[in-house]
Length: 358
Image 1 (cartoon, rainbow, N blue to C red):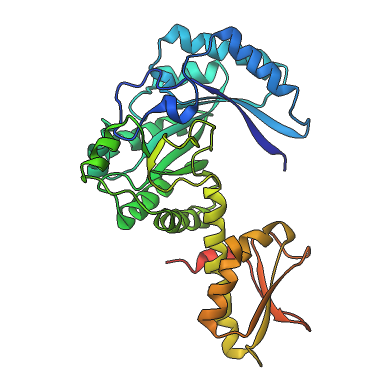
Image 2 (cartoon, helix red, strand yellow; image 1 turned 90 degrees about the vertical axis):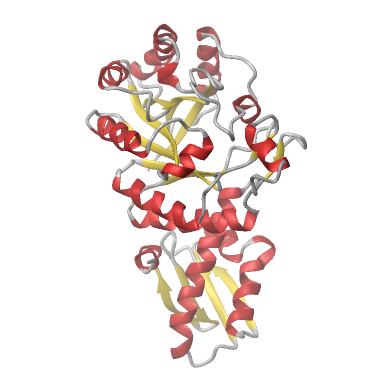
């Protein structure tokens, strides 16, 4: 299967009818202007020269409510990408927008002009969380928007956030359940950050908003991730892209920012899967004093965790004198095995583990 790479064109806050409490798009996107059609073409040309031929490419317009910008500007941007779609240099055009900013007529026009994926900034399906975040729409509008997109050939993406005002684990998992029912083709999950210059910063400084810790955000996102994966829905990103602006010391005032947030989530998932495997294996094992966990080579860092913390946690919880990790190229992706120096005794595939999640 080919990798998919986006040529990202940022149009920060363009077309957005609301300024959500958490939003300061110019800080997040590291872009302080709107690109002209000529600049869009230059960006596409430059990116295509650096992308391998075995990669599927999309031109992606991110950062604004694409379907709310003036129609001529929409069409100008789409026309920039369309020739590359027609000559098969790219495989699709992707846009991001709000659930309340599309209708049947506009969807037909987007489809005609080559749009292949629409990502909806849903954020939450909890009515109170949406209200407190200043989103300006109701959960029912999200459901209707997804239904309309499914009635086209356009793929549906859903963007969700954890740690919004009024949010908690129960509400995040309920949003996950409802999102699965909407049958998106892909999902992104972002932790809420307190960005300088936002309403959320003011609420934070006044003590009206308490951001998640990094550990809390990783735990909640991991719980959502495994549920989406059990439903066979790809989670294509977890955590904001660590742009230069976002990593500057004064941009993120508070909140669970980490440049490798997605990797931390996958490490948490691997820890829980290994824990599940050891609980099942140890009661029948001849000895639990020196064990080895096995994983595919590319997933070694996920299993051992940051600074080998997963291994330390498992050794302590299960009273093990030694617990090593070996990579095994024969294991399927997502699988974890357990055994000793004589060999592997049991394997837990990721799919089997996911089915155990309540």
